[in-house]
Image (cartoon, rainbow, N blue to C red):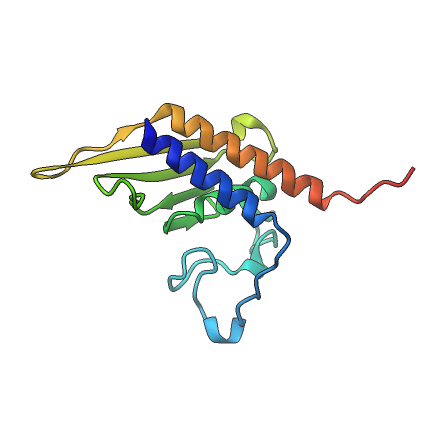
Length: 168
């Protein structure tokens, strides 16, 4: 549908714009206090704590590169909940300005510690406005696969940026 194409185009353009090399200033940790880096809500984990072992744990329970890539893509929509330990990201409902009668919500699951295509699962839920309110949510499997591909592409970019350059 046109809405799906527009959202995919918006996600792709934002991803490429994010790779432009213009770093944004980091927020002052003193001003944020106990606010989660991911959701802006009280509690949660701090960016500095990612990858560090917790009490008795062995660090991040999911692949850190895949997690970061999923957050980069999901952050294009307002985030509702981010849970590092279960490897899940949930966005709020979002409508594109050109199509206010339809809205989507993403649920992203990181399923393992390896950077593999089967370690990511995305569910796109779609609702349409009716005379009585919003319809029950439907899943859009095609859009889910496209967002999974975007996340995997972003993960490959992150991995290649972190590898040291080899000189011949």
